[in-house]
Amino acid sequence: MHILNPLFNIGRGIKIPGLQGLSLYDVLEMYIIGIAKGALATRAGAISYSFFMSLFPFLLFVLNLLPLVSFIDYYHDVVPFLEDVLPSSTVAVFEDTIENIFEKERVGLLSTSFVFSMFLMANGVNSLFSGFQNSYHTKINANYVKQYITAFCVALFLALFLFLAVIAIPLVEVYIDQNLEDFGVLPEDIIGLQVPKYIMFTMMFYTVIAMFYYFGSPEKNSRKYFTPGATLSTILFLITTYLFGIYVENFAQYNELYGSIGAILILMLYIWLNSNILLLGYELNASLLSLKKQAINKLKKKE
Image (cartoon, rainbow, N blue to C red; front, side, top):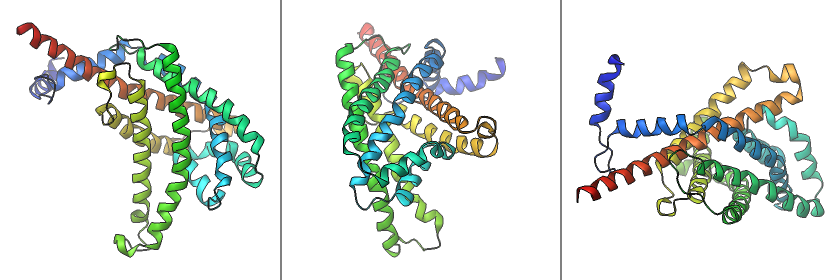
């Protein structure tokens, strides 16, 4: 520990704006305590199970809407979008189903899958909100009925948001391709062509994560769109997705060992990792809020 004392002293000397003089060391200490005592992995396991149960019905509903949009193409728009969001080896699990949906429109299935998928998705979002409330730093429990109604509304918005994202991203790519010179991008500049797409994906991920934190926080006075936790989770999500893709493609042998079931295992692991990331971001927000309250209480006592 003596070796780390210089680092601790540096951390104590760095003051965080807006926390009434509290240091970076105080924030990290509170953050680590929250992670260690908040049963993070257990909460992430419960959340990932609920999200996994809701994922396929939710995707089925959104994908049933897409054939109604005439300019959306299965191979050029939908598959690349899913491969950017999910591990590529898992897309093959439901690739035939997606292709079949685009070939045949099913109005009856659309209404049936809507009710079923919204119910399961609301359960997944509600499980996430419950995971937030079990934070070590959170002392307020929301009303269950109100929380479930909020979760249902968030799930509904999420479906609409994802539907619009699948439509918007190809349109932006087409617009940029047709106006390359205006953006100062050469046709052979592959990286330049990919930058707008990844900016849009980053904005999409941040919006979804910020929405979870905004509506999932029982502390109504602390609700904000831009938060350190949402920024941290977005960065970790992008890094994890990239590294996880490399791991699956080059090191993991799930598909060779288990066949198509291996893709399911990969998807479950991916959801579990991102559930941990969502909780890590929330713990950061909760830690900062707890420190801010402590600092305010100390000032009141001095007065």
